Figure 1 (cartoon, rainbow, N blue to C red):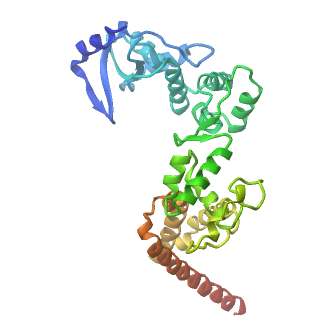
Figure 2 (cartoon, rainbow, N blue to C red):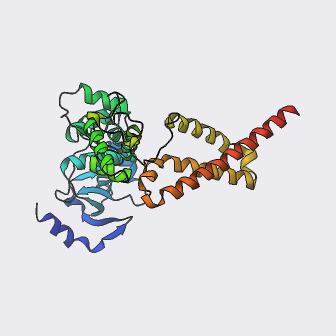
Figure 3 (cartoon, one colour):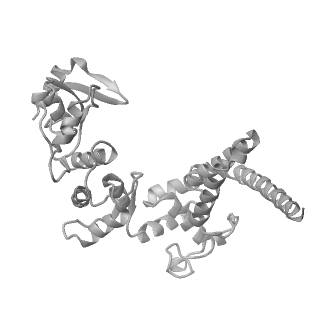
Length: 340
């Protein structure tokens, strides 16, 4: 196996870079069939369809060590049918388990679609080889629903247990957040000025969880939901400390508000009376930028340096007042229109 890399280099005179990937040309006879997620094997009709195309086909994905196909077996067979001697390949470095995961992702993203049975079998195999992947991450990789993946995890005896999940963003989150929340609370008490991102990274929780812990401590509540309304072990509530900054209690559920705002904005974006005027388009852009920024608000809060917090608080409140004045003006206009 150690000679494969040397063989690739010896035939790589036509190597080139494409979108950050290294593409090499290999003799067809060197490339071998791989572990396909298709339970029924290759589709001969699809091979004939590809062979009939005059345009070059995209490079296939091949494991660097074994030169086995990860994605592109139909393209390999079509190239052989056309009598080609070489084929462009992208080399993959990783374990066999990661190679299969990449194969499933590639087949879901493009080309001949996997069947429901293919995707279900692939999800079960990925659950077994990557038990720490979250249900949503596996669902995205396989083209299944999150609930379907969760049910496969729950009902299968072959899926190993894991104490954390790796989400679609690549971040690991513990299933039992009690320890992480208690650790975050300890860090916040020791260093109240620490950023949420710093607390989350050290405690092994997300910035959003660190923010929730901080607010609970400021209200004198336990950092873990459902543990009562008092700080643990008689500790002084964070909010009772001298000179501690007070924040207003949490308002309505931001998820619900975000969904309602998104629906309202989508409706306005389709309104021709707004889209056909420059001021209308400007207004829509302003709201759209606010909506996009709101999705990352937790991470933005966590990234703000401590020396800039007070100025940003003042600026945010001034901007909020501007929007409040705008809403009041619109409300007054609405009353005028109704009275006409």
